[in-house]
Amino acid sequence: MNNGFEILDAVHSDLNVRSEMADAFAEGFSQWLSYFSKDERTIAAAFAHMFVLEEFYIAVKDDKVAAFAACTDGRTKSVKLQKDELRRHLGYIKGTIASIVLKKEFESLDENFPRDTGSVEFVGTSKNFRRQGAAMDLLQYIVAYEPYDEFMINEVADTNTAAMNLYTKAGFVEYDRKPMPAKLSKKSGINNMLSLIYRK
Image 1 (tube, rainbow, N blue to C red):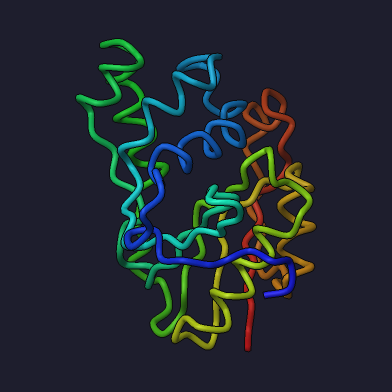
Image 2 (spheres, rainbow, N blue to C red):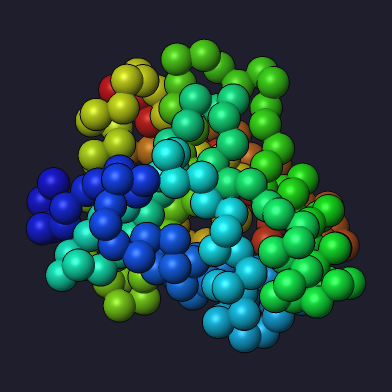
């Protein structure tokens, strides 16, 4: 890859992968999870358990996890939430709500997901490595070495311009958009959820 990052299978790394991935996840996703906690450290601790490391790649530089992304067959979960872990860090009530609401959001699988297509999921970059090409190197590696002719990224908020710029630069193009319900759109500022595809 072109930006000097080493791409590794997360499950085979000797680094403190789960903790560093959780930190990057919290940095990137805390704004969407602020109901459960406004503290990034709490979010990181609560969700560190969820990553199915066998499904993830990491970009590494200077012995640090710079970015991560999962690639599955669309029928395999890349994250699995545990109610007890969520309750331990978020409290009984919010942990219970998270286990119900986010399980549906994070773990839902599409029974009609096309075969021979890769599903790219949970792309995140550590704030210390942003705008250095870590996520780009990851995506380029995935589409080059995973045994699929097509790759999909689903449910990207149209307000997430950084993600959309990354994906389009990597060669993904929009193939579908779902309008947000009016009340949710007004509250979140998101107008549409976009789906993208990459074809070799």
